[in-house]
Amino acid sequence: MNIGIDTFVIAIVILAVVLLFQGVKSVSQGMEYTVERFGRYTKTLAPGLHFIIPFMDKIGSKMNMMETVLDVQSQEVITKDNAMISADGVVFFQVLDAAKASYEVNDLQRAILNLTMTNIRTVMGSMDLDELLSQRDKINAQLLNVVDDATTPWGVKVTRIEIKDIQPPRDLVEALSRQMKAERLKRAAILEAEGVKQSEILKADGEKQATILEAEGRKEAAFRDAEARERSAEAEAKATTMVSSAISAGDINAINYFVANNYIKALETIGSAPNQKLVFMPLEASSVIGAIGGITELAKASMEQQQQDKK
Image (cartoon, rainbow, N blue to C red):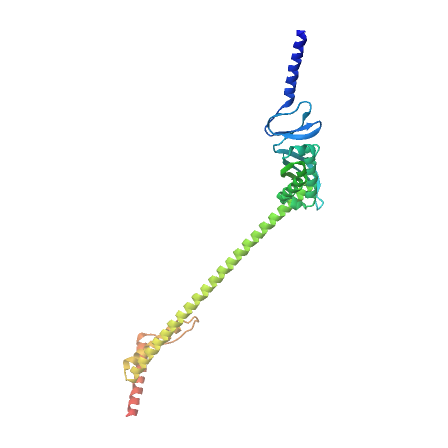
């Protein structure tokens, strides 16, 4: 009898331990569990210690609530201008509602991955190759808007979609490389032509300034020469006037000076002439003085005659 009681007690204890283990659930941080009663969703267990009814309630799914990243495998895409490219990327998402993520979609990660791949082909296929290579941020933004809207009913928030790599065909890459090289050569030629043009402009401007300065110099020199000739003429006219006044007053020395001065100038002009000639002139000093004296006597006689006529 005692053996039967002991066995019953032991069975009760074992059952209590089993029920305890079945009813106590510990949820880790960053996770949420869904609870099903007879196969129907009843509640969601947050991180911490929880109790459920054994054999009636059970854990339906264990959902990771942390942000998760998925690699989007490389796939071929035909662009708007019929270029075949290969593109891959990554998707970052976070589950906000564990119940929706568990019961609104089957295989959440696979669904998000296929949805992203489909929209990559759609978005990139509506663009030209140049747009794809230069506007990657625009592609990421469009993909994020489309995929996030599509996954909202699943209790998921898509936080980011990034295109990692875009690979154009090899022949297209070579053509783009040649095009870039041609553009660089064109820019270099333009810069060189602009440099030559600027140099020629500066050179012409310098020559213009030099010509202007040279003309200004000639003008100034001509002005100075004219001024000097004018002053010389004024001095000569003044001297002639003075000599004429002296001659009128009967000054014989003035006549001698005037005649001798002009005679010597005439000799200087003849001596500096470039042509070769033989000239017989009274070049001796005595002859010059004699000639000057004869001229003086003639002038003196003329003056005396004029004075007698006046009387």
